[in-house]
Length: 103
Ligand code: FES
Image 1 (tube, rainbow, N blue to C red):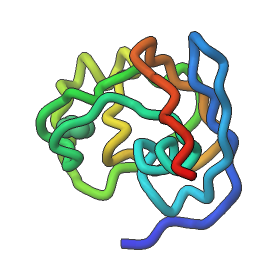
Image 2 (cartoon, rainbow, N blue to C red; image 1 turned 180 degrees about the vertical axis):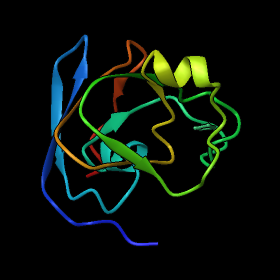
Image 3 (cartoon, helix red, strand yellow; image 1 turned 120 degrees about the vertical axis):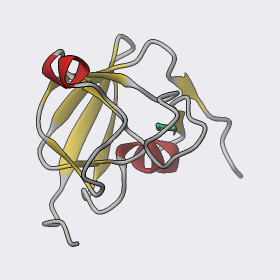
């Protein structure tokens, strides 16, 4: 499956950190490339450790049934480890932290 490339700005509330991503990699990995750590464990959409809320924007999943209930999806919860940005996004994850600079 392929996803339309683009250039999307992602903002992480409540800290207001932003980064730009092409939409070609999942949100969790894109954040990591920008030295922002979002909590994760399985990274394949089953453990729900990374679950956070999407406040605005569109994402897509590469797997058909990410581990979220329909109520959670309705309430805006997403799994950033498997969510590909499809537009500018605002997500809310108070657990986001800055990674130490790698060099
Ligand atoms: S890290 Fe397990 S569902 Fe995202």
